[in-house]
Length: 291
Length: 248
View (cartoon, rainbow over the protein chains, first blue to last red):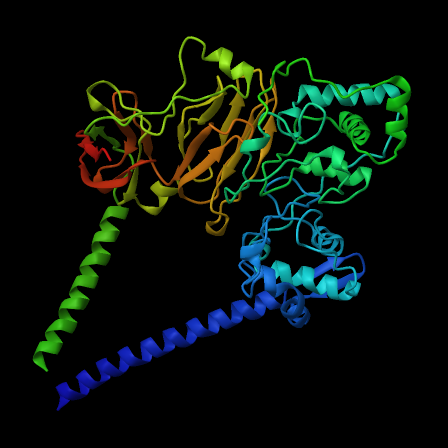
């Protein structure tokens, strides 16, 4: 009899343990979910709440980015470039250094701007509050925002005046750091390495062609252009140059790159006056393999 | 009834024993340090390593005028020794031993448009250096699994650029690293806990600073995967473990 009771208590202990474990596990997952849904974004005076974006996300974003935010929505198979996988916490358009999380305002701006030459449209028709909420919702998919802080934004000094000297210096930077290896000697996106570029998921990807007049993926202003090559576009072959291009040289390069684009600009006007031509750089092979 | 009792009793005995074992391996003093040595061989004919077409970059072509470059996925030395195999202790280290970081800083050089070494092993949180000896621009683009804790980054390194210092937060065997500008440039960072070693051109290795105890050693090769072996290190008597990967 005593043995039976002992035995019974043993079984009971086991059952209770298992029950408690699964209960606390369920609680933990629920707690984690609640905590993630409590994610906020702060853009200036705006505060976005992830929980408030659930409906908006389901209405506008889920088709491509998927219920889990992993970029595996039902439309994803038809798209190129592929929708972003938010669970990795890796983004092209950042003010912060390579390998770090972007600022909330970077996500907010990307949602509003859309990504040119991709299927991501501008979401400016949504209210700024809705976009702030979505930025928080994007964050809630990756645990990185629980454990890490966004990186330090790179500093962009005040834009100097465009001069002929700066344009020539910019061309020298373009040749010295060998932008042309991918973007081509004249910026047409046809450099010797262009044909073999792949993104982090090993999918083919094209370098930007400055001559086709498309907007940059991460903004249109001179400051945006400065930021793009200094921070690099994470997830793509475009590396960060902030270690190797000084702030002043970076502005020279910005001005030179503007002369390659078809749009009117002061830099382009000066380049025309001094007869600055984007030429094959000295280090480039005379017969760069055309692919 | 009785049988059930016995089972419960045995399970608890086993648990106590296991805990005891764990404890005893923890308490081994790190003062009397030994080592683990051995060789890693390829069993079978060495696979053909394709030549590399570097014509995209004249600088790279020039560096290999007299010594054609080949892929380095499987590098077999005299006597069938496998180079670039990383050996590390996957079981048996105490918490303190596992968090100890090797003192020598690993260096990853970009030389003649190749990675030297092709595989670089290091500890979690150990600072390592990426440098360039080339007169052509490279970009260093490690691709760890972001979901597992290490975050990818992508930095440029034009000629004469200062070395990049970095480290990894968690174990990962292995992190693929590539140069987008020179698509043939592809190597690995192997991030492990505790003492480690990489095989030389003869396929031999020595894991230094291993306290006496019982261990599982894992050998990792990028094409052939991993193999493990049980090793015992006694005071003044190094443990040995030889590995042989079968050629595909």
